[in-house]
Image (cartoon, rainbow, N blue to C red; front, side, top):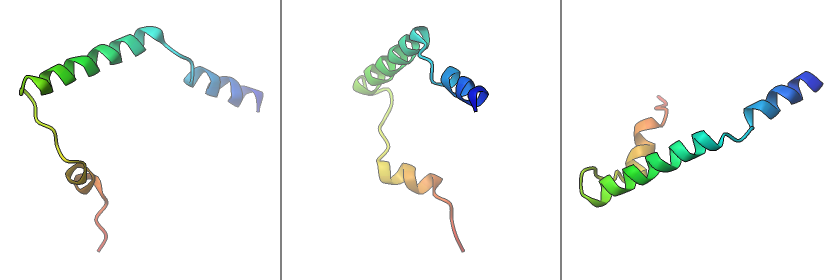
Length: 55
């Protein structure tokens, strides 16, 4: 179990550089939305697109 715990700990480790890149990407997307360059998609449409269809 110790090996598994060590592996899981590395997966959950913070990466400040990666966090900063995601923050910059989120800000860029928000600004593009506010400028009207991209449009929002209603949540129900996104969910419907990815739901598994059952027969």
